[in-house]
Length: 70
Image (cartoon, rainbow, N blue to C red; front, side, top):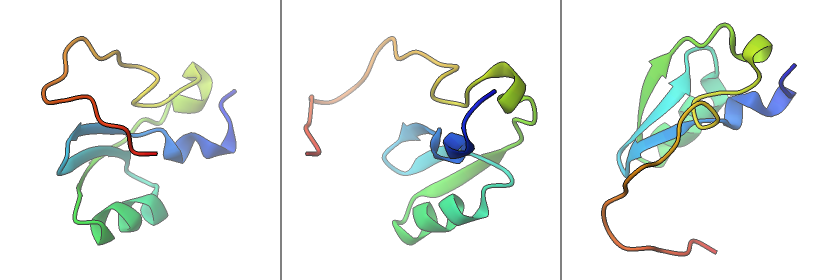
């Protein structure tokens, strides 16, 4: 089973758009306050499959430069 923190498992499409679980209203509000558009998708089998958007995908190519956000 996945953890209760699954709602934080999102996938950034680009700097302006993010894939977010449909029912995760608090994290959607957080992104919207930051000016990021939420693309809401239901992943109802996430807990049984053990992951979310980021866990289910792999980056194969990225544009831009490597940046540290620390």
